[in-house]
Every structure is written in structure tokens, then in C-alpha cells.
Length: 102
Image (tube, rainbow, N blue to C red; front, side, top):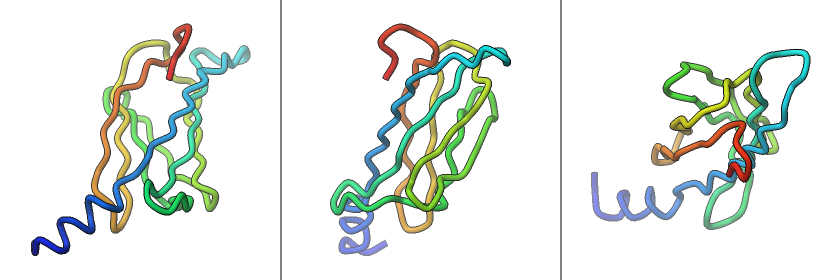
């Protein structure tokens, strides 16, 4: 990979706005994890990216507006991984279903 490509890939790294508002879903066990993916430089939505909670093997795809939702996540600490074409893979910690989760 050339230096230019590496710098460009880093410059297009995501900002994973995991709002992980861990909204309780009363009809189901677990919580709802929601967020919005956006390009950290332009602020544009990142559509079609795969969002995975590693430990649970739960995944979804971000919509045209960059938003995603994963339902029925048991409360706990996890790793959220985001993969999208043309972007570096992003891995972050997620505290689902806990007071002050972010």
C-alpha cells in the first residue's frame, strides 16, 4: 500500500457515533443498540457498512442515512466492529444496558 493510500485510508476513518442508548425492549430480553456512522472528515453518512457485536455474532447493515439498530442485546460489555468498503475497520468498546452507556 502506498503512503498516499495509507494516509487517505486513515483520513477516511469513521466516527462511530454509537448512541448505544440501550433502550430497554420490554417485549424481548436485552436492549436495543442504535447508532449512526459518519465519515470523520466530511460528516457524510456511511451507508452499507456492516456493524457486528463480536462476542454475540450479531450483525446488521447501516442504512442510507448511516443509522443502524441491533435488537435484543443482553446487557454487558462487548466489542463493536464496523467494516465498510473504502474505510479502515473500526473496533470500539460497547457497554450495553448499563447506566451511562455510550
